[in-house]
Length: 311
Image 1 (cartoon, rainbow, N blue to C red):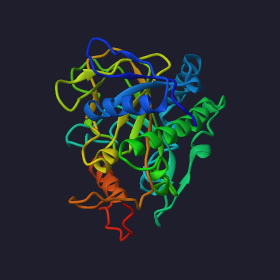
Image 2: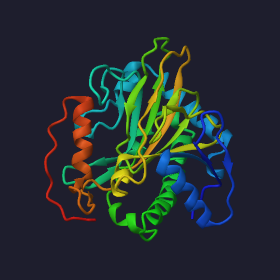
Image 3: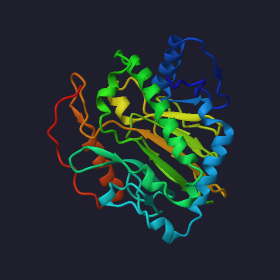
Image 4: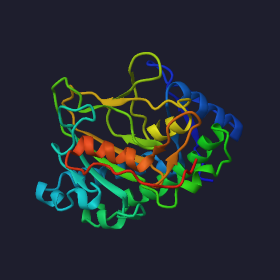
């Protein structure tokens, strides 16, 4: 298995302790404790050493330094399921009101009209700025890591480790390359939100990200060189009936620095239905399309899909 090398539990504003482990049972317990209260933890792995991460951000800067016309050639729109370049002004806060102060380049799996999916990774990384294939390698490695972590989450919920595999025939995993221009204003650069994913994996080059634990105030999610931040998303929160916490998170303003971040989101097939006893069934694809409609505006009203109950 593509296993993590170490974990850091976000349980203190001032210090994030390094939790060592030796056996899988200890690792599962660490993940469970972190995700019940905080919904987040750091992980490191040999596939994401600091030198590799530095090169990843070289590619990000090269892409976002392209002319606006060159970036707009890959503009996200309805026809490509809003996968591609999203300039500032194309995405509103999910709470309504202001636009997010962030340029994004989305790539990964794209939904077809019948609910199946296909990958647009090679197409989206065909630009010369990605010729060293660092972003492609990151995509491949982070998918392996995510599939491994997915097994731990299944075990935490009392299922077999391969339980979630049945929902991954046509996954909608995606990778977001994010650029935040310098902005000295105090308003948030990315507004509070919960990710519509099973979980997200984030690498950030500069600080600004804060998360909201189940109880207590917002806490910093500091930059930790060569380490990835795992954040629980809405789908795992629902699958666990709220036992795993999906923390609201945001990117603070008041910074004269540019900020770059990479966000991977692990998502099941469009037609997955989350079924919890005593709760209404949740169609994953419908839920996500309603979110898209709220943030990009001109997305057609999500339709109700008749699908088998997958549990």
